[in-house]
Every structure is written in structure tokens, then in C-alpha cells.
Length: 295
Length: 317
Image (cartoon, rainbow over all chains, first blue to last red; front, top):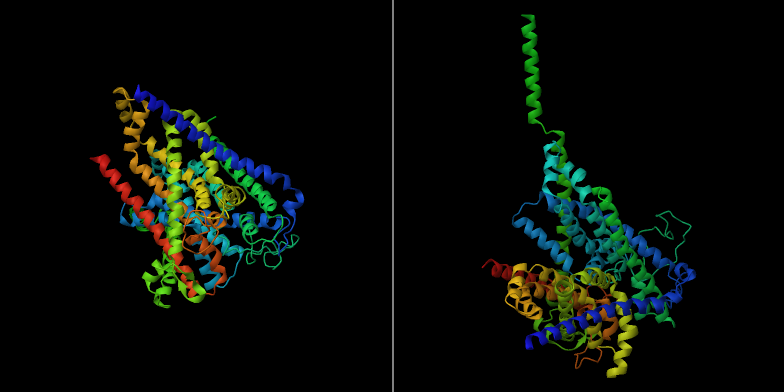
């Protein structure tokens, strides 16, 4: 029968498509790990980069990536928490709220290179801070805010109404209800969202090229005073991250072993992102069990 | 007498106290003011960021036309890009961006829809256990890693298959295809899941095969959602910078075919903005490219809204 044969054919084609998609991912991961991991060593992870050719270890870049991530999260979590609470709790259903929502949507759909250029214009050109950790962290915050805000709002809104009513009926203020009752219940979802966004921030490069810069000056890891110029914690020094390093080695680098270097750096980056993804799931599940007391 | 006076006095102070209490904010109210203040402040920061981003990029982007007096028509239709010599025809980059975007969307959509049908209709169990993580991992891979693999695998492959340098629109399409695939797939899955169950049951009850049900009932009713998914994918492809820049070859000339080096708006921006001086024509011209990116992103946003509205109307009718 014709219809049945078409059905069979369609099923076969769809199965082939799925096999191709799974195959692509397996190939990507296998390629990066197989070509990169043999070159990953302790000296590679902690060594310094040759400023001219871009060859050598990725110690400073790795530190920069984590430092930028921490700073970005320190800035973006409080703001998006407040904004998420506004949208979930205080925002009325009117034109102003829908304007705010569209603004957040626009921000989240802007290409990251545009966000980076805005950061470049604002911090490097207008405020003359130069390529620095802090410029990069704020640019990443712009890029992170809309997603985190939406995630927090969704997690807060998903908490049942009865919990809100319970808090208000006890005479608590709306704010206290939100912070003391709703937030803990919504925490697993929020934490999962935060860790996932950390993975995105960790791998982002386009927003950083012209804000955090493309150079990683050798820093003195014995000096932890943030005010010193050579200190790794100094927020005003340029900081090339791991993702930017991969881009730079491939496009402008003069290293003879650029392919090996970037394969190894990509492997480290991928493993970090995988850990973030896995961590998000485990942490979310763990918190969910703790908060809801379900086994 | 003494006693009643005292009682009266007490009553009075008590009532004073009550009125004082009623006319002053309680602790809870003050907390609410604080909370409201904090959350309004936070949302204000976000609005300020969006507004200043739009304002700064727009004012920088139109400087080419207001300060350097380049005509908009020449900018959009000119094919010579040599800003140092005052030639700023942005058409090669515009064509390049649209070419890679459409090509990636055209290649990725069948794969995405096929995968989504598998996940929702054919094997939801495998879909959840196997494909969901696959999609999430594909989303998680950073764009520089896609670019690196494009450079290390796709470009040499193209070089050996079709000849030339291997850099070009077709390599960029390949890389972008993988990058937009998870975006389109996961949104298509959502829209397929949103199709009411009784549509499917009615179709199967009439004796339709699974493919007939999928192609004529489910896909049709999910069309607005799938279109939205494709547009989101295109927006991502249009704005993707580094991965494209690494494999497209960055030659600001009109693309004649798919296998010669070309450039996109984003690739020109990433390579150019650091080499130009603020306020000069070459710099302003690059900001105009950024403005085009911004406007296209707003356009994709608006398109999604229009589709969502029309889809809603259809369901209500």
C-alpha cells in the first residue's frame, strides 16, 4: 500500500537524520578530545604564553576565564535576582511591563559581538578604562542578564500561589514572602540556570575580544593584593580568556603548533563546559531533594 | 474620680497610640518599600543598559551618514569596501551575512524537524534519554570551538572536495548548520508538543498512518512554532561572529560563488574594529555595519512577534 510505504520511508529517513545528528555530536566530542587531550599536561595548564607567537601554556588564560566568570556572576546575579522578582511579583499586566519584557528580549537576542562592541565603546573609548577584566566582566553581564533574569522569573513564577498566600496570611510583607518562602522553593531551578549560564559565559569570546582584550600579561601569582598592577586580582589589567586565546591562536597566532595548541585548549574548554552542564543537573537535583524533602 | 480620670487618660493615650500606629508604616510595609525599591532599581538598570546600547550604537552607526556625508544608498548598494580610500560599499558583507544565514537555515531545518519528530512522535523515550542531552551539549559547545573545528576539519575537507582555498560561504554554512541545529530543534520540539493530543488521535482514528498524521496534522498545526524556531536559528546565525570569521576567509568582495573567500558583517567587525581610529571614516563605517546587525536583530524579534500573534489568532478562531 502506498501510504504505508510512504510511512515506512519517512520513518527510515527520520531515523537516518537522528543518526546523523548524534553522529555529528559524537564526532565533535571525539575529535576535540582525541586530538586535544594528548597535549594537555600540567605544564600546559599552568605554563605561561609566549606573548609574540602565542605558543606555550594557558595558565594565565585559565585563571582569567575563572576570574572573569566569578566577577560576572557577582555583578549579574543580584541584578537579575532583583529584576526577576520584579517581573514575577511586582509587575502588573500592562503596557509598561510588556515594554520591559520586550527590552529584555531584545537584549537577549542581540549578537554577542554587538554587546562586546558596546562594552568597547563605553569602557575602552568613552571611560578610557582600557582593555580590562572589569570591562570584560560588565560586557559579559550585559550578555548574561536577560537569560538569567528570565530564568529566575520563570523559576519564581512556577512556585504555587498557595505558598504566596500562606506567607501573606501570616502577616509577612510581600518582600519577606518572596525572599523567605518563594526563593528557597525556586532555588533548584535558579541554581541550575545560573550554572548553565556560567558555562555560556565561560565559553564566550566575541564579547570579550574588545573589552577584556587579547593579551594576557604575565601576572605574579604570589601577589594577591587587587591594587597591585602585577596582581592576578587587579581588575584593571587586560585579561585574555581561554576562549579568546583559542580564537587568537587560530587567526593571528604565529605558533608553529597552532593546531595542537588550540586542540588542547579546546579540549580543556569543552571539559569545563561539560562539567558545568553536569554540575548544573546534579546540583539542581540535589537542591530539589533538599528543599522539597522528597527522596 | 481619680480612677476614671486615669482610665480616660489611658484610653486617650491608647487611642493616640493606635492612631499613630495606623498612620505610620509598619515594619512589613517598610520592608515592602525596600523590596520594591531594590527590584525596581534592578529592572531600571536593565532598561538603562538596553536603552543606552540602542542609543550609542545608533548614534555611532549613523555618523557615517551625518558626519562623513556618505549617502545611505551608496553604503547599502556599493560593492567596493576599502574604507581607507573612502570606499564603503557594504553590500558584500550584507550579501555574505544573508547568504550564510539562509543557507544554514535551509540545511538545518530538515534535520531539526526530523529530529524533533523523532523526539515527540516516534520514540519519546529515546528522545528524552539520548537526544535531549545531545541537543544540550551541542548548545553548550562554545562558538570558538566550532570555529576551530571548522578550521581544522571543514576547511581542509572543502579544499580537497571542491578545490580552492576551502575558505568561503560553504564552510561557514557547514559550521553554522551545526550551531543553529540545537536552537531550531529544541524550539520545534516545544511547538510539536504543544499540538493538542486530540488532533493526533482524531487523525489516527480516521486510519491515517503515522507519517500522514505527522505531515498533514501535526506539522501543519505547529507551523507558526516551527517558523519561530527557524527565525531564532537565523538570528543566531546572522549574529554569530567568531566561528564564521574563522572559516569564511574575510575577503570583503562580492561573493561570486560558495567556495571563494567572502565576509560577513560580523567577520568584518571582529577583524576591523581594533585597527581603526575612533571618529574616522573607516571606524564609523564599521559602526554602521554594527547598526545593520542591531536592526536585523530587532527585525527578527519583530518577525517572531508577528508570527506568534497570527498563530494565536488561528487557534482562537
